Figure 1 (cartoon, rainbow, N blue to C red):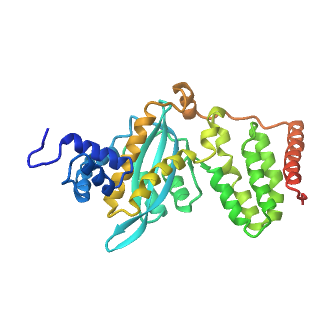
Figure 2: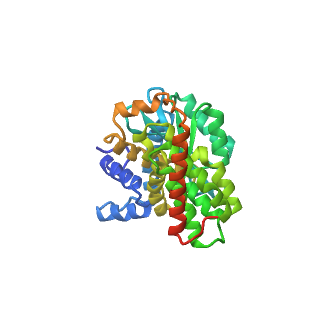
Figure 3: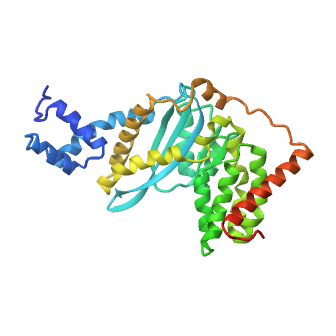
Length: 341
């Protein structure tokens, strides 16, 4: 039960590591230990015990992905403070989540970068490819230029879905200084387009809304027009999967769990400690995911299949879609008490 020259029971070490992964600070662990009658467990000793997680973290980051083909890939970065040299600076933790053929989510990788440049994202994604990641048909992320460029370079032929939630935030920023009703209408127009059940109608609503968005803000109109293909990329995939593909919520939820633990730490003493806690958190979350399926295996298999082509709408259907799109846009604009330009 006791390691040589050790004054801490191995079961206590396991408890300490578990508390650390769950987001309990080393000082709080020290106080808990003292209540258990362990008076010699200092915060530095807690950190030393937790360093034993490094081997598991390294294995987690190096594991072979060739047996885990993924049709969908969610990418994101979240920033935390970390000591580098003699300064405390902001560092980005980049993570990748994939949907496997088993219908479950999997954490595929995690790394710390200085900035979200194309080179840093390309190195991260290249590492996933070298470890055997294959089968990716769609990448979901925000529109960070470095990330998008790296995806197009490393996953040629793969579609890219721009997170609709991030797009709405970008449009709100572009409409800065405009009346709140106008900004709300722009947000509603995006929602109306991406939540249509008919892909053809979604594109008609987008086209009908574009001039009105441009009348609110020229900058917003440019963003809106350029985003059409990337915001509606999910419509080429199985309808049952759309709810998971419109946004990057899969990553946002994972980031919230990382940040919950980070709030206790406030600032990491090194990049290694940042990776240790982040990856330990991811491993715990993935353990929970192993008991849950996002889709059945049969449904997940549809994500790997080549999308069936849709026939071009007839002239009569195009006119009907145009009328319905105008009604949708007019209703949103009028509901906000505005006039359609």
